[in-house]
Length: 136
Image (cartoon, rainbow, N blue to C red; front, side, top):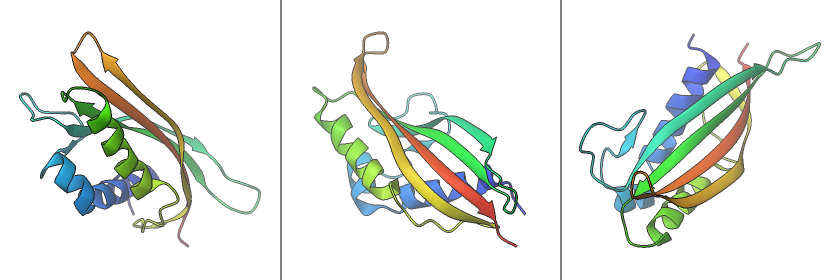
């Protein structure tokens, strides 16, 4: 059985890459763990992921916090904000199937969009929190 974090990451990737609105905005194959050199804009990357024990006296569980980053070179923030909305609507309260685990909930906790002067790109960040339990 894969770890809950791995199962969650695979399910999130599948949900995002299977969203036709997101694919129309980004183009094919624009969701990365780490963006390759000379990647075309816009694209998404997965950022920080953290896990904590979320077990009770009677149930095992894990809490996961992860980020999705949106990168755009379009003029203005509109493209970044539009992509962020698609990501949020795809993942917030989603009922994703996890291999070997049950997703109790998945919620968007935070969003931020800004222009990154150092990279000369618009950068959107979405942070999500998920709780998982192993399937018996």
